[in-house]
Figure 1 (cartoon, rainbow, N blue to C red):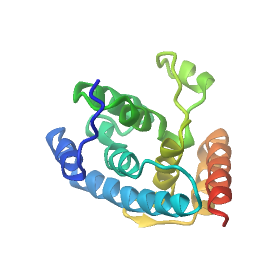
Figure 2: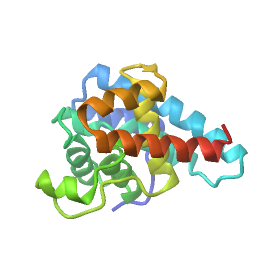
Figure 3: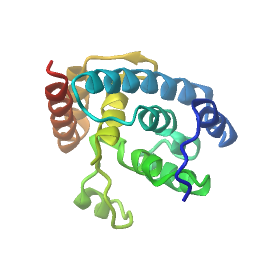
Figure 4: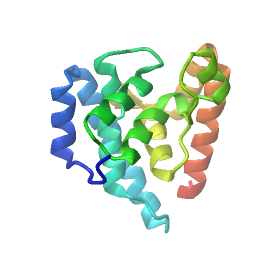
Amino acid sequence: MNDKLPSREQAIEILHKNNCQLNVIRHCEAVARLAVDIAHKLEKKGQKVDLHLVEVGALLHDIGRSKSHDIDHGLVGAKIAESEALPDSVVEIIKRHVGGGISAEEAELLGWPKDVYSPLTLEEKIVSYADKRIDKLRRVPIDLEIERLKLEHKDAAERVRKLHQEITSLLGD
């Protein structure tokens, strides 16, 4: 793997090269704007955050949607990112952003390879959280997303709620 992060422009170019639809690219750009905003605020609160990694990871988080719009788009995207020789830090953001994370038990039920599919680093958590706050292109209250998830998947709703609590406590909100 390459350790060098692509530039913002190169990340967008990678999305185009992999035939991501324009609406997916616009969503990724919206998530990146929010994620970078959150990262800046966290940095001002004394947190050590790799701003460039947050931006690039957020821009590329849905690259797997070029091939799948199912829950496996994070796993598919991680494989694409590996084929693009992107750094492991970006691959992990892509793999771990879905639904505030996927538990080991859920991954096993889905037939996925044994791995970690929940965000661990602060950068991974920021991108996953920002993704839950953006519906298509607009920011939405996290409560709406949690309520929506409760109807589909209670465990995911709880993970997103905990992620929200963690990020907001770090922000001091």
